[in-house]
Amino acid sequence: MSTAEAVEPQKLDLKRIFFILLGVTLFVTVYFSPSWPDAVDPLGKHFALSREGKGALAVFLLAGVWWVFEVVPIGVTSLMIGILQALFFIRKPDVAFKDFMDPSVLFIFGSIVIGLVFTKTGLTKRMAYKMLMIVGERTSMIMLGCFLVTVFLTHLMAHTAVAATMFPLFMTIYSLYDEEMKPSKFGKAMFIGLAYVCGAGSIITLLGAARGIVALGFYKELAGKEVSFFEFTYYFAPIGWAMTFLLWGFFMILFKPEKPVIHGLREKAASLYKALGPVSSKEITAALLIGAVIVFMSLQSFIPAIKPLNKSAIMLVCTVLFFVFNILDIKDLEDIPWNIILLFSGAMSIGFCLWETEAAKWLAVNWLAMFKEANWFIFVMGVAFFVLVMTNFIMNVAAIAISLPVALVLCPYLGVAPEVILYASLVCAGMPFLLLVGAAPNAIAYNSRLFTSGEFFRYGLIASVLLLAVLALFITVIWPIMGMPVTLAG
Image (cartoon, rainbow, N blue to C red):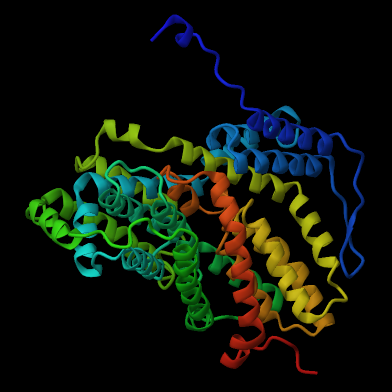
């Protein structure tokens, strides 16, 4: 290499600079703007937007732009969320940065460690090769098989744990498609699809995510009605499974695999499975520990005595035991994707910031007040759309908590049954297809490095439109046929 080549200046990335400055400009414009008008709910109650609330919206906009266009590593954008809250007195530093180690973040940490254990012990390869021996060599069937296993697991365990469990299996399968692990259409479909179907599956039972239990608590308090475990699944199973197959079709059209068939894959998978030899003691120990955690957390929904035990603590007990039994060692800590941990840490911080400053409530009241004289269907879709957007930025539980109270107040005036508001909101809260911070499976899938955050957002727009179209069909046709009241008898 010549001296001239060695000192050649790096090309200026004008697009990156533009989006960095756009985020900063939005922050400065919103933060230093004059006071904004109060939001007024249908009963005439006023909700003022405080200086801190305006600051929360400013941070929200900067983070959104930087995350979507990935102008710096996504974990670094998360650090900016804490920094801006502290420097601009939006929230106290000890509060803003404490959210970075919220129990939910530690749950994700534990879930990722489980994924590492699957990979290190060889359980992943054993599962992947066995699955490929069953589904065969057609890439369309391989993708469908992966999606179906993922959704089935979300019936029994939290979608974050499912994503962490399935991620290494997807990586092993993809390595047989492309040994160099380069980005491809099939790779993008597999891993963006992993994130999307984890969301679709997570709405089907109360075991798929915490949001269902929390939403039912709000619903009981606000509407005075209880929803049973089986009633919940009865209405959600059709739409969850419908979205799973539609998403598979969506990816087969949008990301048609470069290779329709991987010739000789079944024989290769059988050969590789045989080469693994008998199941090792470490595999057995790891499987028993992981199985015990899954069973215990699943039983929490049915056994009141163990329900109060914190899920993050249970997950971390499992993490510690991996080291106690020498399944993992100190070097394995270096393989933790800290960029992903920081990403979700920042998501928790901005979510709590919007919640505690009441900026999210101000947004909800302003948005839903627009529909106080609308047709019932437009109102329900308006609520769903708001939850869909907000759940991409803040905790889906928070998105429901700020929208349900306002929506349920409006229901009687518009002749809308509260049940349809609950179910429509939970459908959208479970499927944040736009931003990586919308759900932990999105961030886990991103760790494959086979797609960018911009691609995730771009294709997520189309998937979100598909979701709203399917939801509209269920609201107007399928749920009423199944017996769900959507309007009040009058």
